[in-house]
Image (cartoon, rainbow, N blue to C red; front, side, top):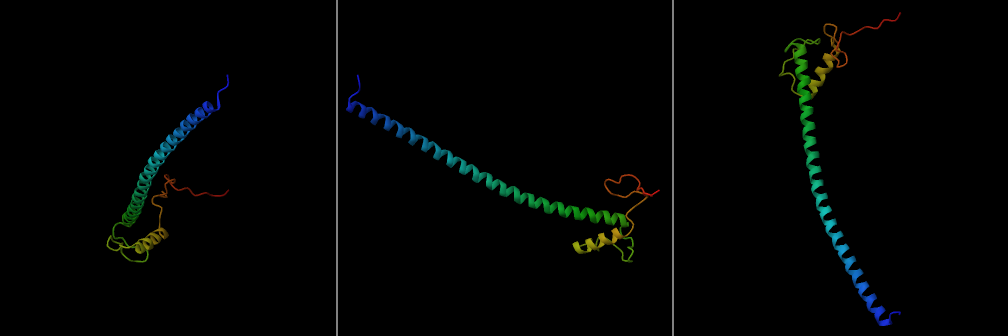
Length: 134
């Protein structure tokens, strides 16, 4: 037998209350998850900034070390105080600024870069070969 109007209304009222409670619980869970993800995002963003700063410091250190390595190679190549083609003596005291190091590097590159038939290039591990056309 069909339900009376009051019974249908009562069932509908219970179902509506149940649905609203379920939606309210879902909204609370979603709000909690959003808060957790936002705080995790903030932590990760802070870590990213710290790593970017550390990366910049390390890049500066690498640049400094490369400069010292180039300086050392130039001094070694020149025999610690040997004369350049321009006639100026080079010592570790002479090389102090980046400008003088760049100038010195350019001067050395103009001179002889091959020693005993070896080019000094990473790929040129063997004696340099001259290509002759037939």
